[in-house]
Amino acid sequence: MSPDEAFVAQLLRALAAAQLEAVIVGSTAAVLQGAPVMTQGVDILIRGTPRNEVKLAQLCAALGGALVEVSPLSRTRRILGLSITVDVLLDEISGGLTFARLRSRAVKIPIGDQIAIAAALEDVIASKQAANPPKDLAQLPILRDTLRIKAALEEP
Image: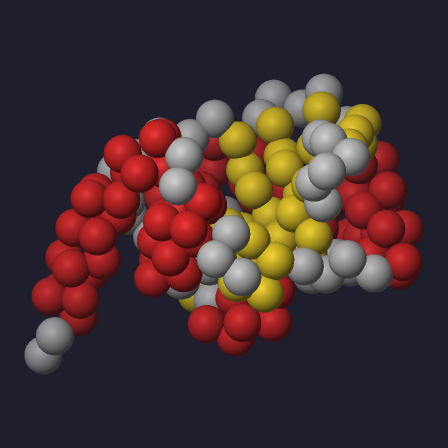
């Protein structure tokens, strides 16, 4: 298991311990599905509820990180002090993709002794297209190619 996979497995164990339901989104979700892209952090999406705020604090304690607000204009939190930065997005991601929608279409991916719930590659593509920053736009052709190859491999 690579150090990055070991970190994701550790994150998944901490999420389970905190009983915090999360969907891995963004480039990490794409990488977990075979996309040959790089990322420097893990993005997770959770429901923004008071109970999940408590669970988020438990998650940070379990990981040994500190939770900070990215911006007063954003509903994104960041867990600092870890080997890999974790961004926690609340309720929805770019493109109006809600937690419920992403969770209903998510894929389950085994990582070590854990199961990751990752946004479907189609949803990762839609979100990156809607977000529109240059680094996301640069990944879109690779993500679309990955989706085409996966579909071709799954055909009978």
